[in-house]
Picture 1 (cartoon, helix red, strand yellow):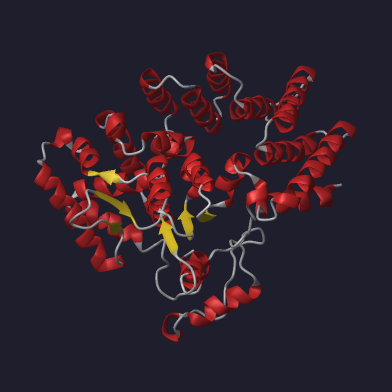
Picture 2: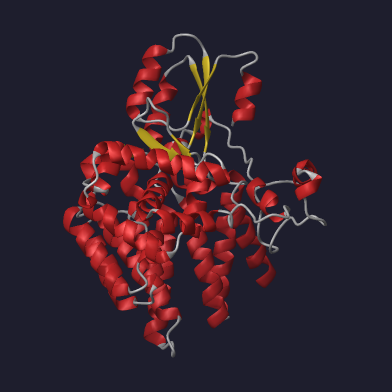
Length: 432
């Protein structure tokens, strides 16, 4: 994005934004009177704001995001106004070029380009694989250990900051103050903590936390960095922070809560925090008591599914469907997955269990046919078809694979950037 901005700015007026909100979009539209190109990172964080900028004849838009986020938001975008380009995959020439730029003193030989045949490496990973020092991921682990030993409150603040940033919102001082409220720190002491955190981590791994003296917020400098630190965070640390945050910080203090809540209760975080499924279930029930939306129940169901608690998962997704005021295809998709997983792994799959498996496939078929967000439904259908075929291998199983292939090939025409679609196509073709 920054390379493109640099090149375009030689002949055009260019503005770059890290993300966009409706309020920002309104200000931009009112202020810009000369033709401008606007580049927006994480543009799917608020698709409504991105689309709102289309209405200005003076603005040309270029949005950047991960292909998964683009896929689930693309139905909101007018395809006739945009080109979709993939800049994720690295060609062999790209990989060699990155490798060649690593200084000889720290460069491994021979070059490593991937860890397994299905991985498509990123620039970040190519550097990780090919330096003869602790790789970038591993460099955070000792820093986290050091923070725990020297000042656990700093560790909590770092983890909390990364958690919020992975949910695409910054940490305001109001959030930090509320988070540490039960520990009795003053506002100025919390500011000192944040400054100490920047300084301590800076010495070892460079600038991790963005934020200056005239800004009343802090955030990691990239989502990749935030997620990398969270992966290195020990489960019991994350559990303490996760519980403490949701116990102490009221939702009205969280910047852009409508964005935060989309991923804040994701089963990924709860699985990392709660090894004991009953604790995880209690967490979701407490959240649901204050936020009675079907999406909380959906994530609870997915969490229970990960814990192989199939009956409990089915009850939660059924409840989500009951309280939905309209048809929600993502919840129907989860319902299909729960039905499928609960029966495909049964010790003895009887005729009733197979009937339930077929019902799951029919739910996904309807989702694909009736929802505009087809990619996710098609991939779920394909993954289940492969698993179904591995158990039955009969004509019905073959028909599911053939239908999967048809849908995926239709999607691939518009979603050339989706690596998982390409991978599933190859696997199904090989079996057929």
